[in-house]
Structure formats: structure tokens, C-alpha cells
Length: 123
Ligand SMILES: [Zn+2]
Image (cartoon, rainbow, N blue to C red; front, top):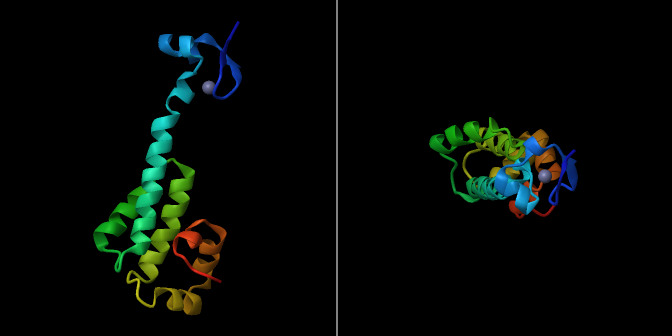
């Protein structure tokens, strides 16, 4: 006995569905997706914003440390890289030349992530 979820395309036990979810064929887990996705997009936008600021402040760094701790792996991973950038060179001016010279490890992480694209860096 089970019930089909049209989002994850799984047959799941009835307890995985709420009353409304039964009718809509969306399991409890998938019914949470839109909000999570929205939050993820918002947080990744926030991270991109930090990189575009002329300076990443101490307050921003505190916020980054919070984002690193989130269970969303993509957000946490990106936040971790932005945090490393912020700690290495909080000011945007001459940041890239500094990182290229002194912190090739961070440059590599940026290259491996979509953050590089956000920074509009052409390697
Ligand atoms: Zn589902």
C-alpha cells in the first residue's frame, strides 16, 4: 500500500502525505521544496552581494559564519568560500590580485564553484 508523489516520482507510504498532499499527489517532503528553493536562491544572492561590496564588514563575517552552519550544502559550501575570501581580503579593491598572489587555494575553490562566475573574473 502506498501513494504516488508526482514531484519525486516515488511510491511512498501514506504517512508521508498530509491530507491535502494526498489530493495533490505531493508528499510532505516535496511540499516543502518551493520555500526551501526560495530560501536557497535568496541566500546565494546574499553571498553574491557580499562579494560585490567594496568591503565585507565584521557584521557580514558574522552572518557568513551563520550561513556556513546551515544544513543546505550548496549554501554552506558557497558561504565557506566567501568567508575565506572575506577573512583573507575583506576589501574588494585589489582583492583578486592579492588572492592570485597569496591565496591560490582560494582561487582554486572559486574556480571550482559558480562563485567565480559571479565575481565576473576572466581567467
Ligand atoms: Zn515527493
